Image (cartoon, rainbow, N blue to C red; front, side, top):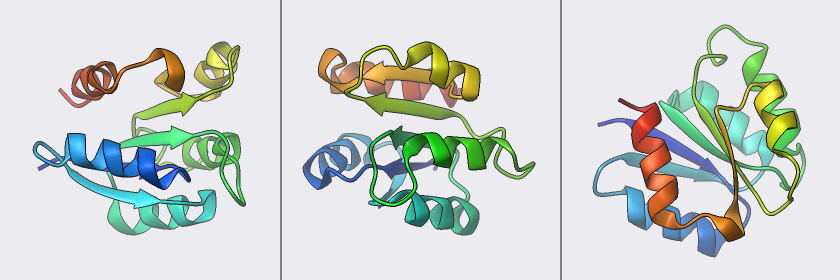
Length: 118
């Protein structure tokens, strides 16, 4: 079973993602950027859902860390944010997708995950 790490500080949203994904994927959640990086190195997920606004290290910092290490640079990262206008910057930084939370349904996120894990 493929593994998805959800790095999201909004626990209700993280729980909703985990519930939606749990029938098809093994999931874990990290609340802070630092905890997310520890999970990545210890658990080695196949894909990461990454919020940009996190306590401690921001999502941008987490993405930069992931992309500079050989062991993590190829893990697909889907950035989920409420901030408009981040798409190009996040793609340029190495994100595979950048989705606006308020404009994207759970089913659309699931479809993007499936596309990247084929």
